[in-house]
Length: 515
Ligand code: KIV
Ligand code: ZN
Image 1 (cartoon, rainbow, N blue to C red):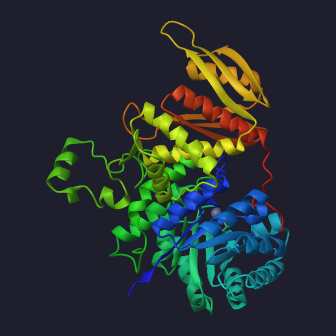
Image 2: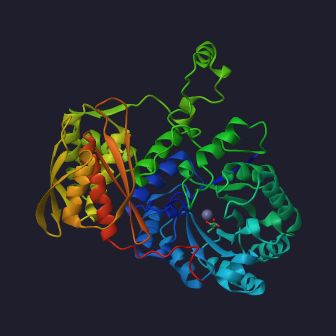
Image 3: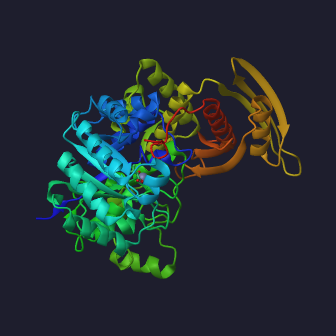
């Protein structure tokens, strides 16, 4: 009998640590529902002590999810653990994940603690977390650069204290696959009570090795992999869930465990959902979920695939959810059909008013674009969500003039701080003119770091989804907007980013705070 490989998704926690990728409570719930539909075992929903918003988001995910275990992160501190325990209280299955750094550099420079103090605090934290749940996970942060002897002592002690899962993070993505696999094998062999806990891994992608390192760990005894959709995460990201799952599934001949419980047809829809909510586009050549992952360009390949698809394909596009875009709704669909489809996508509104607002938007969109896909619905709901928190600036009207041989000109009316204000500007192109006009009103003093447009679906009537990244005083924010008119989508995305900039975050970063 082969073991089940536990899939622990941390898109909502480590993924959210990607600069600019913060998500609202409702967005987290939508992603969590999608992960649950996929059959993910554990969903790490956030870091409850980071801010009241993070606490509420973890609580909302705990309420919304029934099948998957919901997990909250905490440093090895009682106050963090108490927050996590409280936020997770509504969950049917809950896990507290507590961590403290064990590498010489982190202990000496960041924590300013001796190894003995770290060990003692780790044990205390696990015992404290056990007051809230039997399902406690412990991570020695920066395990990939920790002394193996010390790691063994810490792991033995936390397993004795009641940790059911011990997670070995390669926090800075420094390890190589053979080395990381060996580390896992050694730990499992040397820790006397290793059989009392599941060994897990959490690999970062700084050298592009997160998936390779995770798989090497699985081949050497790890039975949980921590990963994120699209490989989102701190710096270069985490191991991509879709790559880990499909590697184990496609190469089942090589792995002593299986991922049969994962509904892989949910991979592409979930990838798109995460990309549209965070504004992090998926590169076209990205394995599994990139637009070109199953596209055969060369004539020889096309010929081969037509004769027998196995000539060039090791997995079927439809097995990971690449079905032809399904028209789900249209101009004549009623409120009930709209509500039902949204429910199937895991989207429910708090009030009839919010549903009515979204339905009115849907009708407007269906007038412009006759075939409405799931992706359009997701974008539309994101916009309604964003407006609920974005009260400071709102786009009221936009007029753009762009002609060959003439300088583009824009006139923009914004609702700004309680009043309507209009401004005009010229620009190098229509989008530049619109941004300049908006800035005349807002005077943000922010730098535009990224501007990107993606078509949400295919066809020239598709909605364009624009992402705008702004930076001010070292703080990065990301705004999104969608519309069939990409200049309007750009204005919405810019206004969305400005609204985020206007609300200073009050969030602690889990891995930077002092213990
Ligand atoms: O990368 C890391 O070490 C982490 C821990 C909190 C598990 O994210
Ligand atoms: Zn991490």
